[in-house]
Length: 512
Image (tube, rainbow, N blue to C red; front, top):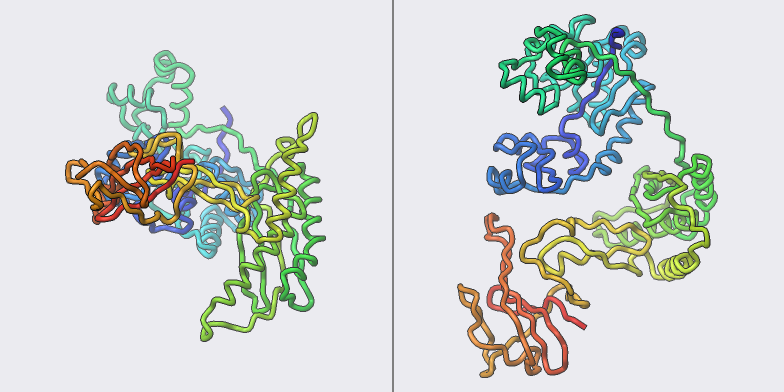
């Protein structure tokens, strides 16, 4: 087996949490859940007994105030891409193992800085200055040993050449990340990597096969996996600077048309399309206003120009609302930068054999209406997860990709089954649900109605069903949100969905 390469590993602890929460640690107690299982948790959550691999209910049993978010691997990759590009500026040839873990050859950067420890220190200092002080760096023979070294308590750990086996010996066999083989090794009394490497290689191969022999080689520090550097990203960003500040949205939009065309040409040369773009506007005081825009398919030049205009209109509206004592003179925009934040293979967005005329005409027509009415002028409804109708309806501006804040595929006990009301009242509308004597109906602690409903909204009741209790976040200090739902059909053939919370009735939605 070839001698392992000297590699440098950069590990960012709890990277999925940083990507989800949008900031550096320390983080509040938070867990990321996938398939109802904790896949990552913050250090503050681990202090209360929360661990990866636990079921969601078990984790919340350890800490009732635990914040639970869905895990999004694509979000982790998007958030780590700028960090990877930053590392590549100082150390070309970086390989991405997974979001939060980057690897590069140690020889080149160590020769530049005068040593492996000096190179690791320079990278750590650079990343700390850019807001990433939590990075851990390990230098060793091979990827496996270097990753174990990076996960140590020190900011930088350098394992001397040829010292991998001695360094790895005290670590438990669980670091090999093979539950079946490590579980059998523990039952046989082999608990550390040193004890595993002390076994006869022929006996290990006979008992565990080639895979077991491979794990024993890793435990001995023999790691010959090749590094495959990530190809450099094409330069897709384009910007424009103005000699004099431009204050009008139409002026800026007209001026950036060629810049938008240049972005589309760069995307075409790379055979990709842009599905997410960040637009940076720099004013005459040097302040940068950034916003990220999504698209359900892909941006064209007109879409990019519209996003610049809408961002300027929102900026002007925000400036007009500022208090007089905090307001400042707004001279205008001096620079615009268009940065494709997410791209996709252009082959995935090619029209069908016979075209897609209807969808294209619809998108063009609605986009023109949106251009006249503004970004929030045309919205579409998407289904989100939740128990209340107001939580399940997400309104997204036309042209943006709907991102539900809660997964609608997750189980939501107490949620309303299909069919859902066609009309949702936001906020819920106060309504009167009366009995035959004209008194307001009430619900006792057992969930029973005081009388049968006789009138709703001043109209006689034709039929009704319920009530059904809804109680969420029972563990919250305020008792959570609770109520009782009722479905009622009046004499005008209107079907209502109402609920009682506290001492009042509210109309949550209406069927049509």
